[in-house]
Image (cartoon, rainbow, N blue to C red):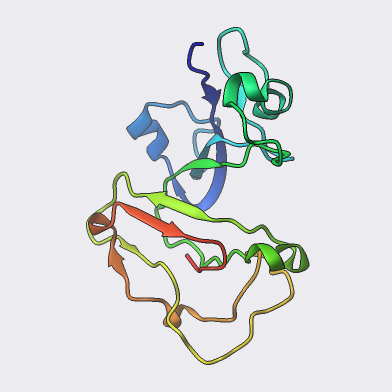
Length: 181
């Protein structure tokens, strides 16, 4: 079987830039908008990767997952209604928000998703920093109400960040569900 490639989905973000053009030589869908994310592989209800060439051209990742799962992905994934991995490339020209994704046992109650993340730092500007986790602060409770900006909020303020790590010194960062990033 030949490799299957997908058309990226570009997400406008106020903190984004235009590096996908320069670094990856891509044509972005608008000549001015800052794009902060390129979703390379996605199977979500509102966003779908679409095969860009070959005999499966035009098929969505969800169609491949639903109708050709064992043939393309192998066995052992029967419990997953959707392809369980989202792959993004980020172009962050400014600070991103603090995010805390709820643990699986609280996700539905909080209106969020239990997302475990793996970050690979492909390139960064000198002086870039990465914050992973929060310092233990006052024993304030986790909010049980969904936030407009994140799946859940633990009421910690930016001053409670863990120490900044120079991005150039940490090529990989793992943030399990329920840990701030």
